[in-house]
Image 1 (spheres, rainbow, N blue to C red):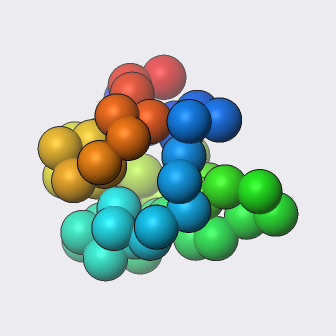
Image 2 (image 1 turned 90 degrees about the vertical axis):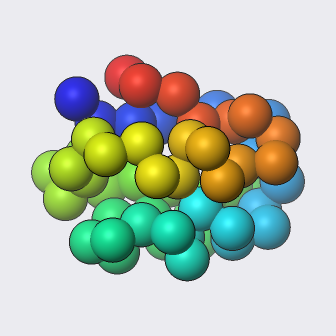
Length: 56
């Protein structure tokens, strides 16, 4: 199951550094997760200081 980043994203980039497959990148107003590349491991969810990452 892929994860998604909500509008609460602070654009800090903490999640991108934790993704083992590089599925997270900086978008226009927040970071975004490539659902096709996401393994669903949850490493990003626990790293997000804003709690903006949840399972889709």
